Amino acid sequence: QVVSIFHGTTTTDFILKDDEDRKALLSSIQIIRDAYHKASMKPNITREQLLLRYAWFDVDLGRHAVLDLAGFLRLLRRINVYIKQEKATKIYRDYCLELHSEPQYRHSLGQRMRRGSKMSLRVNRGSNGHRDHFGINFHECTELFQRIKSEQNGGKQVCDLIFNELFGEGRESVATEDIVQCFLIEKQGNNDATTDEAKNIIRLYGSSGDGESIDRMSFGQYLFSAENDLFDPAKQRFDESVLNESLSEYFINSSHNTYLTGDQIQSKSSLEAYAVALHRGCKCLELDCFDGDKTGAVVVYHSYTATSKIAFIDIVLVVKKYIVANPGTLPIILSLDNHCSSPFQEMMAVILKKELGEMLYHPTSTLDRLPSPRDLAGKVLLKGRRTSGKDDGLSETTKASVDINGRRVSINNRISFASPLKNGTRNSKDATETPSNSVNLAPELAEITTFNTVRFKDFSSAATLPVTDMISVSESKFLRILNQNENVTLWKSYNRQHMTRTYPSGTRLDSSNFNPVLHWSEGCQMVS
Figure 1 (tube, rainbow, N blue to C red):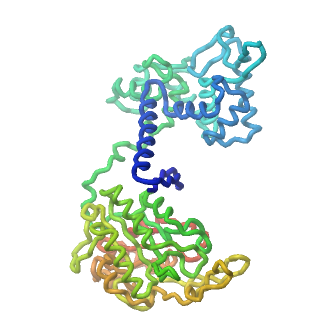
Figure 2: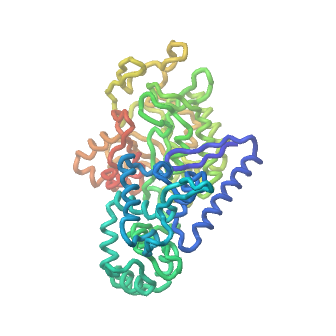
Figure 3: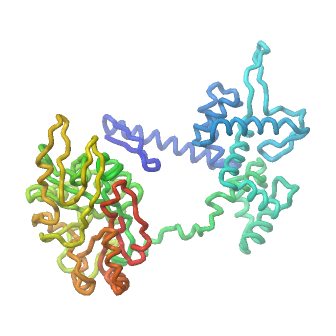
C-alpha cells in the first residue's frame, strides 16, 4: 500500500505493509487536520498565528516561553522566511531596542504598556539566581513577523495609510460600526454591508480579545487576505451546468512529455510526474510508447535520448487509481505517441481494457458532435492514430546537440543513438525502434482510440472530416500555419467542432514552455 501527500509539485510518500496500516495512517492524518481546523475556528486566532504557534513549539524545545536571537533565527528557517542572517540579526536587535527605548511601548495586541509592567524582553532566572533565558515572547514575535512580512511585500506603508485614512491616525483599534460605515460602505462602496460582515472580519482576524474590535495590525492582515480579494468569490463557485457543451468548447489542461522530471535529453522518467500532473488538474497526459527491451513490456520514455524508461502498465494503474479516488473527475485524455510494433500494440490494448474496464471510453463510428465533459465524467479517452500512414507533415526535425556523459551528441528526431547500458555496451535495439510515422496500427488499439490524428492539408478540407479527427502541431508549425492570413479565421472556425493540440518545439531541450495565449486565442483546446 502506498499513500502520497502532495505539497506543491512534490510528494511525501509512505509505503505501508497492508490496508490496516494505510487506514491507521489516514486516520491519524485526519485527526491532525481536524485538530488544526478546530483550533483555527477559535475566535481571535488567525491562521498565521496558529501556524506560527506550531513552529514556535518546534523551536522552543525547553518551553521557556521566550526566544533569544538564535531561536529567532531557527524559527525563520522553520517557517521558510529567507533573510540574510546579518539582516535578520539587525531586525531582531532593533525590535528589542524599540521595545525598551521608550517610557511606553506597544505590544502585539496594539495596547500601550507601562515601563513598570511585565517586561517582554526579559531575563528569566533560575532558582540559583543566574540568568537563564533572554528573548521575546510569542505575541511580540507575532508582531515582529508581521512587520517583516509587510516590509517584504511593500505593504507596511500602504496598510498604515489606509488605516489612517479610514479611521484616523490616533487610533489603534476600531469597532464593528466603524468597519461597516467607514470601510465597507464608504470605502468599498458596499451599500448593503451589514454588521454581520464586520463581525466575520473580526472573528477571522481580530486579536483584541473582546470580539468587538480589530487592531491596526490585524486589519492589515485582512487587507492582504483572500477575504478581501478583488476577485468576486462567487465566481469561484463551480457551476456544473456549463459542462453540457461539446468537448471542443473547452480549454483542456494539457502536458507534454508528462513522464519527464527534468530536461528532454537525460532526465529521469517517473510515475510521480503523472500523479503530480493529475493532482494539479492536468487532463491530457502524453505517453511515448516503445517496445520493451528484455522485459517484454511496453515502455515509455523520450525517444532517441538517454532518459530513463518506465512501464506503460504502471502509468495506466496511476490513472486508474486517480479515477477510483475521484470518480466524478472530468475526462482524462491519454495522448499516445505510438512507436510500438503490432504485438506490443495488442498488449497495450489488452492492458487498457483490462485495467480500466468501464473507465475506458469506446468511441462510436458516427458522431455529429463530440460528447460533453458531463457525458465523459470519469472516463479515459485515447488520442493517437487510428489508421496507418506515412509522415503527416506535422512533425518537425529537431536539430540540436547536447553533452551526454562527456560525449557530444547530435539530436535529430530522424536519427537515433543507442542508450548506454550498465556494462558500458550499447543496446542496438534502441537504434532500430520503429518511428510512429510509419507504424501499422493494430486493430485492437485502433478501435478504442477516440481522437485520430490526421494529416493537415488545409482547413477547408479538415473541416469536412469527422469530429473525432484532430490535428496536433508544434509551436513552430503553428506559427507557420498562421503566417497565411486566411488561416487565422479558418482555424477558429475549425476548432468549434474539432480539436487541436499544440506542443513545444523539439529545440526546447530544457523543458521550457511557450506562451500559450496566442494558441488559446485561435481556439486550440489542448495547449501542452
